[in-house]
Amino acid sequence: TSSRSSSEAAAEAELAASELDLDEVQARLAEANAQVWETSIAAEQATEAFHGARWRLQTARQSAREAELAHRAASADAAEQRERYGDALVRSYQYAPELTALSAIVNSGGIESVIERSSTMQLAQSALGARYEDLHAADLVAQDAASAAAAARLRAAAAAEETRDARDRARAAANSAQATAAAIAVQRDELIGRMAVLQGVSLELANQQQAEAEATPPPTAVPSHGSGSSQHPQPPIQGSSEPPATSPTANPAPAPATPSPNPAPPSPTPPPAPPTTQSSPTTTTPPVSAGASRAVAFARQQIGDKYRYGAAGPDAWDCSGLTMMAWSAAGKSLPHYSAAQYTLSRPISAAQLKPGDLIFWSSNGKASGIFHVGLYSGSGRMIHAPRTGQPVAEVSVNYWITPTFYARP
Image (cartoon, rainbow, N blue to C red; front, side, top):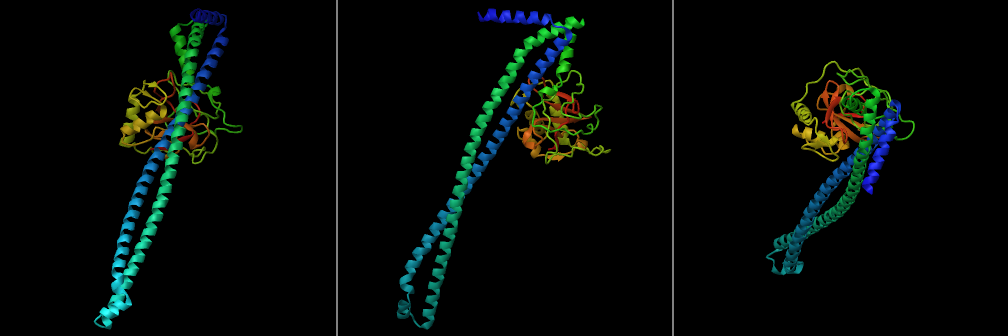
């Protein structure tokens, strides 16, 4: 029954598509593309949120380990001070019968002996007091260390719970994006077939045209982040022949047959963002370091690999997984988390970009909202892992909304 129902639904969809004119077909294809991009962007944001939670968990666990080691060291020092104080206390009691004034006079050979023994008693008492002060200080340090270790363990436990929740949300978002893409694929194929007939072109050419149209995320796929926000225009990236985007709703022509990022528009003036009004591009480009060249070479070798949420190779990638491993090949350690890749790098402007630098998109105009990253490859282009269904590719930086941040690892 379910098989017959599916067949009937497919036949009805095919019949409905056959009655559409070209404008209606193109409108439905655009709507389907927008749905795919919306779910893909949501999935990437959820995935990067998971990476962030996992990164914070690793940091919290490291802090807990360090706090535990400090607690153990402080406890050991307190125990040692306690032992020393006990020894000093025993010696003080042992000396006491011989150091009383009466015993000193009776057993002394003269006033010099009395003075000498009295001085010895004072020194012993002074040493005992110093030992007690050392013990008291060591106990306080040990108590503080115990409290710090307990707090660190609680933070690590909270981070672990946050990570589990973020992982579940990322999985749900990824499953939703993949289900949407799969559900739309059948409708898309039927619509492209109808479009080929209406245009009088081959199915192969119609598919190619549609792939080019889908390379750029539509403005409707961009998440909204409050009213009144706008994206200030920036100059083109050095070496790019394409104009910059002038607003979040700009939708310039895509580069032919190349995949695109899944960014969202940033809010204005995000600290510590690079200036939104850039000065004229510098005329002298600094030399590219050997490490940056290796990072670009590694990323370029992955072109054509598929996109997969949370992947970091060897044959599938997400955006921050690709840039992490590219710079790992250059000997630089970066976390699998785009926002942390920015905060751990040196912010630069668009005019300062050189191969190997990182390019970021934020959903809220702040570093905390970064959810997509690409690797600048030179001549106004970048290498990145866009989204499910769009493989790793080298594309123009300026073919869609202007990036939010730029940084150099």
